[in-house]
Image (cartoon, rainbow, N blue to C red):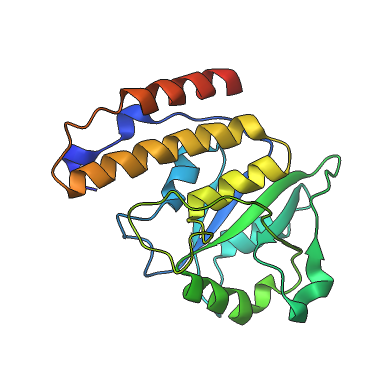
Length: 205
């Protein structure tokens, strides 16, 4: 984002009941409209890894094999991998991790199908009636959520509504501020969004 549209002053950080690992497509890393960074800004201990089809990030693989983590790939249900579909279940001594394939829907499908090192990981489907609020890219369908919205859904789904509300509120700041910057309206009043973010962040701490 241009410096004049920076939202660093609004950033908050919470310790959620899960962390996120973003496997990010190379074409997604430097897009100013990428919302994956909002997850890492907001949800403590979340990380971004570069996706490669045949050369997985070694740190990612190491953490994937760490028994202290309980990883799930966040992806819609499909017949060809029905045996991998699960619902979230808390496991004592293991921290839940949601792996999000960060890219366009077409890129995410390719990443899911072509990454051999992901083939044994349980898959969990986001369940929601939400429609996207994202204003910076036009999805094919209004129920196609952006990366940050998917993360908020997963937090809700596992019973961490407080952290989901913080991420949602920070996303709304990003959405409104960057949309205003695109239209040269950075004088837009964001006090309502800021007040909500402060309120939910205080409740989550």
